[in-house]
Amino acid sequence: MSAPQPLQIREANAHLAAVHRHAAELEARLDAAERTVSAQAERLARHDQQLRAALEELGRAKDCEIAALQEQLLTSEATVHSLQTALRQRNELIGQLQTRAELLQDICRWRPPVAGLLAALAEAERLGPLPTGDPSHPPPSGPGPGLANSTGDEEDRNHLQPAVFGTTV
Image (tube, rainbow, N blue to C red):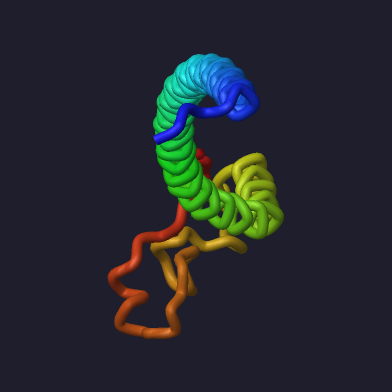
């Protein structure tokens, strides 16, 4: 074999130097890419950690809100129950008062006739009993009809006492 020529050696050296520069450049780019990937991984890890913390905070806030809403629901249910009980009691009271109101209306309807009856009884009391010595007015136990309520039954008239005016009210 023959010795390489100086031109070939120079070209081979230049080629080796270019390959070596290219390898060094690739290694530098690889280091830069590794640093970039490492920095991105760190940023992603921090971002992931921030998102997890935010998610946990949202979970805690949700749990607190659910607890507050459950408490409010229990309070509202208790209020509804007490209002329903009060409503039932008032409905019962209204029923009782309606019965009394009807009775009061009946009393009010009967008031004028009762007032007239009481006035008549007062007038009769003011007149007093019939004199016993007057021949034109026989005594109630004598002949003639007595002052008694009449049912129209002759047999009942014999058992009735003569009426005496007076107020017992």
